[in-house]
Image 1 (cartoon, rainbow, N blue to C red):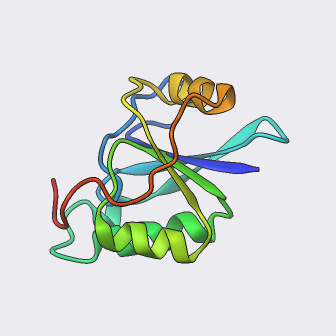
Image 2 (image 1 turned 180 degrees about the vertical axis):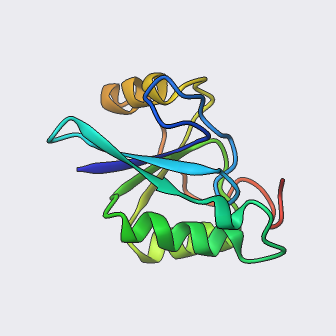
Length: 120
């Protein structure tokens, strides 16, 4: 299973980014293989609109079936939900800590967006 994490770095020790649509990168971890790839999201950092939707499409294209992030807006939530991507929110400081929490089953699945659109 592939799990996407919002981050600004390129390692498991990188900090989590609490934003979804405007996170600079996604670390997509393959729990079966034990490796990961980085998906760049820099095109959405300064997008005037549509950042969440485009980011959701990128996560879906990565093959991730789950997303772990700090917050998710309504449009991104709708796109992710339609793509069958489960969304989990966390306050973990690093990707490694968020991954540990995900594996332990201690993250709650989001049932709706938890921020308004255009949240920065």
